[in-house]
Structures are given as C-alpha cells and as structure tokens.
Image (cartoon, rainbow, N blue to C red):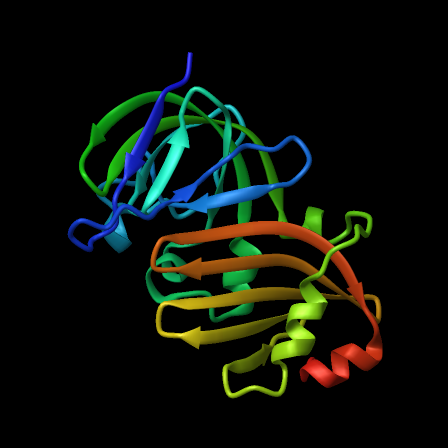
Length: 218
C-alpha cells in the first residue's frame, strides 16, 4: 500500500513540488540532513560526521518541496556536515558524497514543509565506486557545451575532481562533478536544483580531452 507524503514550499498557496519516483535503472537521490542517536548532540547541529553504513538506522530531516511514496525504497545523498552547511566547495566535500538507498522505518514528525523520517540504509555507492562504473549514454555534456561560454558558467578544479556550476538564476541551476581518472575525464554526477527541488543523479559520461580543455578542467 502506498504511503505518499507531500511537503510544500515556503511560498503561500504554491502547489509545486518535485515528484520523486524510484527507478531500478537510474540512481536519483533527494537531499536531506543526516543524524543518528550518537550525532545529535555533536557539532554542526548534530549532523552525521561519518558516511552512513549499510544496515544502520538514521534520522533524515527533509525540507524540500517534495512528494514521495515512503512505501518504496528511495535514494538519499549524504554530504559531510561542512558541505551540508556551506555548500560543496572542496575535494574533501566531493569525496564525502555517498548515495544511499534507504527504506523507511517510521515517520517521526511531519509538517507542512518538513519531515523527520527514521530509515535503514540498504545500499551505498560512493565517489570511488561510481567514478569507475561503465559509460552510459547521457546528454550532460550537451548542456555543458551550451552554457560553457555564458556568464552563468564557472568551474573549480581540484586534484581528482572538477566541479562545474551553471547558475542561471538565483533559484535555478546545475552542478556537475567531473572525475579525472588516469588521464581520462568522466562526468560522474549531476545536480539539478531550483526552488522546488535539489536532486542528484549518478551518470557516467566520458568526455574528450578537447572537451575538458574547453570546459576549463585542469
């Protein structure tokens, strides 16, 4: 039996939200704050300091405009506490990313625009794993090609990764993580965000050295 919850955005009378659908074939994750019984009294407002582990139980605090069926499994992305608060702006932050397949245990609290949910982690996929997955056909590079010369485009280079940001408006944009592996370049994750969603997706799209140069990847 379905168990659909709908969280609204902060604008009065707004009915828009992101409808999350679990897929066996694509890893698409919502964002949430992660806590555990041990972390709640810690620094960074009790955010979970370590990556979630399979079989362990955690509390998720969700505050996006979202509709989701909690009777189904769902993916949630984890960031370290600093990146959760300050944004993804370092190599350590990228390395902290983990996609977690979750199963709802209970709904601890639900409001108009927020929810606290107890979950169990069923599966995890980290940057070291999804960076090495086989290439699939995607269109992320087409979007980057269209935006690379625009005023909305920026790139930050780290040792093993680069982060491309396309911020079209203050409430609409994309982030792409580029893995730099043995002289090859691969788009490994895409983030699409706006006022009603903040969704991360694992992708595996190789790009050429010519494209990497064009994008400002070093």
